[in-house]
Image 1: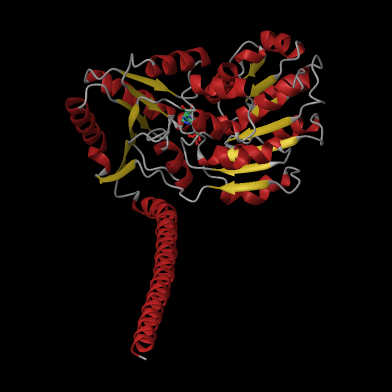
Image 2: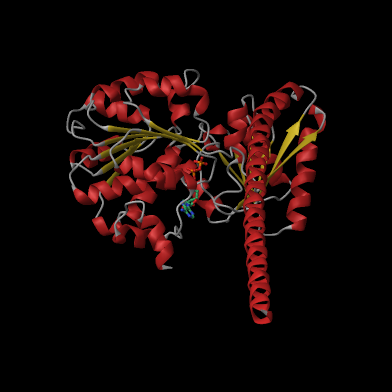
Length: 429
Ligand SMILES: Nc1ncnc2c1ncn2[C@@H]1O[C@H](COP(=O)(O)OP(=O)(O)OP(=O)(O)O)[C@@H](O)[C@H]1O
């Protein structure tokens, strides 16, 4: 496994960090890590667009820890992410991988004790992982900490943080950017970056290293759609779950729906049918959200009903099935939701319930997926063409070599025949 060690350390990670990776089962770098980590370690800004479940978190955690080990000081790195659960998940990766450094991380999210957070911030933690709203509150209300020397600003799920619209992060981001040094590295990651490229570039990135994975869709993900009339959709959902739980007893299922109310109703309905179900949505108390997610992760409950607060980033290896109880309005929401399964090379199934009112939404999803599918198909075809041309070329070379050998052989034989004749002629003289 020295070679395997080589892969990660050939990307510029110290041995202690490579060893930590192995503890997490991270032996060989994923494409996004292989491509983005060297540029980050060189000090460049970076935008990484890679499919769901492909290790984007470690792609920024590892270089930050590498740099921190070379020059440790407080508030070295700030990571922003759109949801509280994601903040905890990212902090966990920093903690596990950064253990040998005695890493001090600090999580700043809403719904938790603000005073305790202010105290932690004043202790100059190495890494702060935050949701924009709560961090902006701390910046507005106290000056017990400074971020003037941070080396890294990281936007996880960057397109979500920078999109204008419902839960607008813009104001909070402005407050945060106001206290950050211009001289820093900015790293942006998401599975759906490309459609907001311009805004992303506007956040003061100096010629960012941009990398996008060729394959946008996860091959191991089996995506299915089921047409069902609106009024029988819930009955169909029950049937679907019954079938899955009959066929597989250890499967975990996430069901996405569009409103907190539907989340509650579906949870009560499934419990009526004795399906062990738990919910996760933004109207719940934060402690309840964390508790429910922990129970689902521990497989105490096999079915999680969630709104889009859980659509992005959550990494729960036991999830084999994602069901869209409603067809997502935006293709990129679809991509993130179904990306909760089939992660890190595992297989997974997604099923989207499509009613007569959603057909147009499916078309735009298909278009986006097919576009990437077509893109993949085109790329594969091109690759095949190049491969066959190469093969043809090699054959030609081979034939030439054969012909040449043949000619030389013939020449040799001719020569030998002539020599013989000459000799024969001499002897007769
Ligand atoms: N090099 C690696 N080899 C194997 N597993 C890895 C590797 N890097 C990360 N992982 C694991 O893969 C899983 C998915 O990683 P991660 O959550 O970072 O995906 P992501 O790309 O951020 O997905 P999303 O777009 O959904 O946020 C995690 O459990 C992580 O520990």
